Image (cartoon, rainbow, N blue to C red):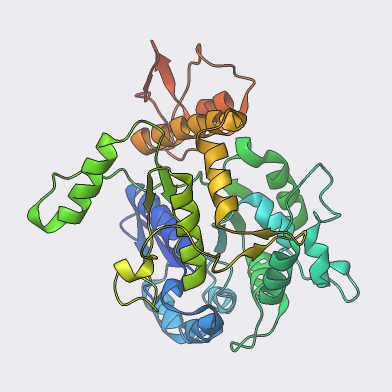
Amino acid sequence: MSRDGSIHVAMLPWSAFGHLIPFLQLSIALAKSGIHSLPESAEATVDIPADKIQYLKLACDLLQEPVRDLVSEKSPHWIIVDFFHHWAVDIAQDFNIPIVRFCVVSAATVVFFGAHKLPAVGDKRLLPQSWTLPPEYVDFSSTVAYKKHEAEEMHAGYFGQNASGMPDGPRAAKIIQACKAIAVRTCPEFEADYLKLYEKFTGKPVFTVGFLPPEKMERRSPTSNEEPWSGIFQWLDKQNPRSVVFVGFGSECKLNKDQIHEIAHGVEISGLPFLWALRKPDWADDDEDSFPAGSASGQPREEWRTSDGRRRGRHDIAKALEKAMVLKEGEEVRVRARKAGVLLELISEFGETFIIEDSLVNKESFYSRSLELQGVLFTRGVPLPRADMVQGGC
């Protein structure tokens, strides 16, 4: 600790929103506990074409000396690092500072990658097709695996060479082997088996930090500068509950023009009201140019081939939406979605730290167990946070 008794932490995330945001939320949680974090800003992967990401890795490696200078000047007590910054190990060792590896993905994912060590020569995990099946070292029932086309792409990214000169796999392995502990963005009630297996493999303490949801934002009254959002809220308020399809693929999924148009036609064919969150693609002149004009009739622009060779297009999208939103055969999906929605609302409303006194739901179900761990106190059906809740969550 410093002279004033505070703890200083340096955070080193990879420059993708799926990594930056969890690191930001963890930084906020640490700051609320009295820890001063040292954030680093950089260009995000969303701004770069997929084939240029390797050059962002090269640029990120150029941060090694600035980070070394920063650590030398600020002398943080801990360095919390993502999978990428393997050179943080050397910096930490030079200044005798412990490292914590923060996994923004699930425990199931890091176990699947086997990031605690690199496969030996001749190991079948060095073959892309091995990633279409759960790893043999997972000694319980698991369906975590990639489809064939996914396996080839992800395997190449993990073990293949890039402009930085070091694949992702060796980067992650070096960090895990050198770190003092591993933090995972999950809860033990969600994937206890994977957490135990990961701790066994790594030989390191593995602890969970919860799902780190963003802080709840108050809905602002619309102003003249927010007319587009005002119109969207007014439109949503007029729709029936659970009737609107939200279309969003995240910041890292870069769809081409034909794919976006095919999806748009499929949603239109379904006849369901929808809200689409789409960042204006580079090929579009403006927001309206991102979507196809006219009706949903016409020939498919682009279809997707699944791992079993079948093609999927607009009509398959429409059928899937109708099944999930309207048809009787999709009722089970809707029930699960409602349960997940309740849990997410509770987390958003009260945070991740709760105690439950459950008299309304079956404790044996995952739903109620999840609520129990999130710490919801039910009083006449109204969820309330406990006054004696403990910070840290699951």
